[in-house]
Amino acid sequence: MRLELGKIFIKDVQFGSKTEVNKGVLTVNKEELIKKISGDPRIASINVELAKPGEEIRIIPVKDVIEPRVKVEGNGGIFPGWISKVETVGSGRTHILKGAAVVTTGKVVGFQEGIIDMSGPGAEYTPFSRINNVVIIAEPIEKLPQHEHEAAVRMIGLKAAAYIGETGRNIQPDEVDVYEALPFFEGTEKYRDLPRVAYVYMLQSQGLLHDTYVYGVDVKQIIPTFIYATEVFDGAIISGNCVSACDKNTTYHHLNSPVIEDLYKYHGKEYNFVGVIITNENVTLADKERSSNYVAKLASMLNLDAAIVSEEGFGNPDADLIMNCKKLEVQGIKTVLITDEYAGRDGASQSLADANPAATAVVTGGNANEVITLPSMKKVIGHVEPADVIAGGFAGSLAKDGSITVEIQAITGATNELGFNKMSAQGY
Image 1 (cartoon, rainbow, N blue to C red):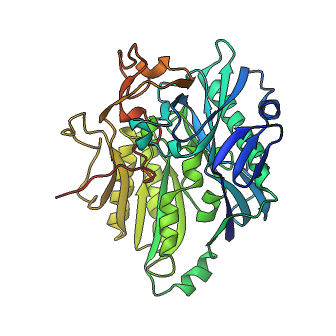
Image 2 (spheres, rainbow, N blue to C red):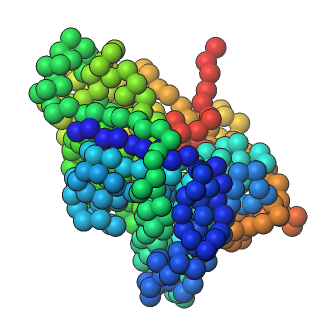
Image 3 (cartoon, one colour):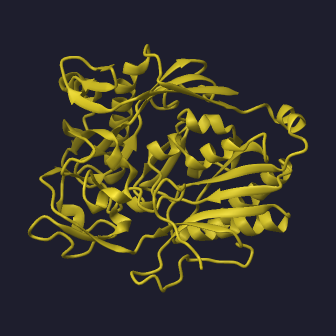
């Protein structure tokens, strides 16, 4: 499969009479956008705001971040199983509004939602402070069940990203990146002298409000499977969860996985990047054993020499991470793990809920328990009150002056376990 990603660089966003991109400026017709994404009876009201880099704006609580895209050539469409019918993506050409995003907010769904500050010290911890954001404020009807609330807002965000992404359909991209995933046996023959490497992509799937979707299917309903890396870049995976904001993979993260990006850099040069094993994160021991056994079986079938394994979330998923590691290492497959840490505010506690001597190569996204004070902002989009109850917050987090003292766990993307952040650790 050969995928071309055409990047249209967005340097500003503004409201106007027509939704379009012109000379790097994204203009959004606010009324038309609201009309396009309205109609769900579970939602009482929708509003749209803009948040640009450097502005004194706080977005809270953040539900998802989605990059606007449009499929211009090849099979399938954007967000298959949701916006487009279910066809296999990962080939052809997709145009991206690089530097723009749709952010969804509104009344809190679950306590594990986050904060994006567009300026100040908090902005340093989230990649989304450097993006021109179209923020959708979707308020639910009274007494709407949490899972219905999340589902409604998820669809609104995807519809908004698809609507805005259409502006890039007939625009010549500023840059085109090409990614190729050869059929299995063809790739094996072409790179027969190179080590075989795969990516084991752990997806959050621990139940209500902890879900991820592949081609519209809730990942907790699948057994591990093998997909082309280009499918991930082309929108096959979307977020549907409310795990702690710091290490949640938003839909934007999936669309721009730095692990896959980096694996492609040396593909065909230092190793053969054969593809992606997607797997779920489970609650029961039996389910954890089943999925990790199946990951090991797929890795054996692929005759891997090495694998990168990333998790999403912390605590319970640490057990899945270590199980995957042990069972791969037993087969002689060298593993590198990507995680973050919950080592206490002083950094002195055990970093993960599980460990094993087989985990000899681990990359950290940082300590999520680190405490930070976020100064007050001139404008808050959403609702600031959840600051005291969201993961990383505590009674008294929100001060009278509007400042917020929280663990960086509350900042969207702060310790992201795909490496999409600034945090890590250095050993001496």
